[in-house]
Image (cartoon, rainbow, N blue to C red; front, top):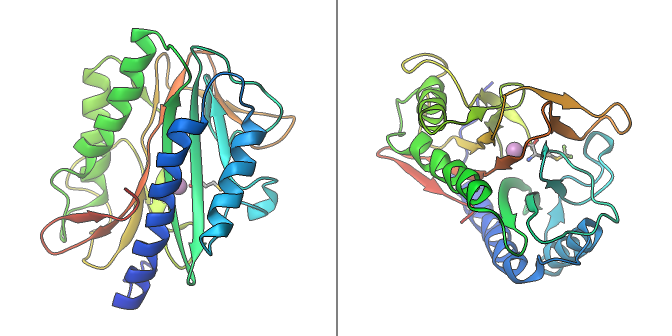
Amino acid sequence: MVKVKSAAQIQAMREGGKILRDLFIKLNDFIKPGVTTNDINKFSHRFIVSRGGKPSCLGYEGFPASICASVNDVVVHGIPDDTVLKDGDIIGVDVCVYYKGMHTDAARTYLVGNVSEEIKRLVKITEEAFFEGIKHIKEGSRVGDIGHQVQTFVESNGYTVVRELQGHGVGCDLHEEPGIPNFGVAGTGEFLKAGMTIAVEPMVNMGSRHVTISRQDGWTVRTKDGKPSSHFENTLLITKDGVEILTM
Ligand code: MF3
Ligand code: CO
């Protein structure tokens, strides 16, 4: 069942979203060569708790950390560890906050030190793909409209979209219906209603779209060809005439 949120629930998500926005600004300075993904996890955990929130990822289906930290060829769901970030890396940081009974979900991909122009472009196109995907979305739009826009934009720029993972409804639970694929056909799929809250999250690969899941930890999703991948995500509210982004 697709849930429409109440005014109070939406307000709680705005406030939770502000925690994420502020965290991502702080991480801009915190993330640099020499920092470990554990350091980023600890910093993020403390920040969320200091603002009265809870990291929704911690313990979610057994996930062992407060954030996902996905370096270079890791697409999503990387588990923070003692990996030291080095000049030229990229790292996707995916964070979910539980605040006043509601979840919000967002991700950024950060550049570590001096990153090649080629990889910078991948990160930039991924962010732009998110905005392309939601550009004309409002009440009455359909899920396939988002996927179609994201896919068309990404592929016309020479990259590929991951198909095994997708965006999702979010709010009362971390993952709600409907699923929001980053590919598809315009004019198909679930209709979007004002008051729905969804996470839109393009995952864009430099090489082929194919991915593998780590057999060691059951979480880490990597590109099959070892080429870099970038992720950008926000939680948004569907309104009568557009969307309100709740996490930036
Ligand atoms: N934003 C991630 C997702 O939608 C949340 C992952 S939490 C985790 O898949 F616990 F699964 F890592
Ligand atoms: Co998500």
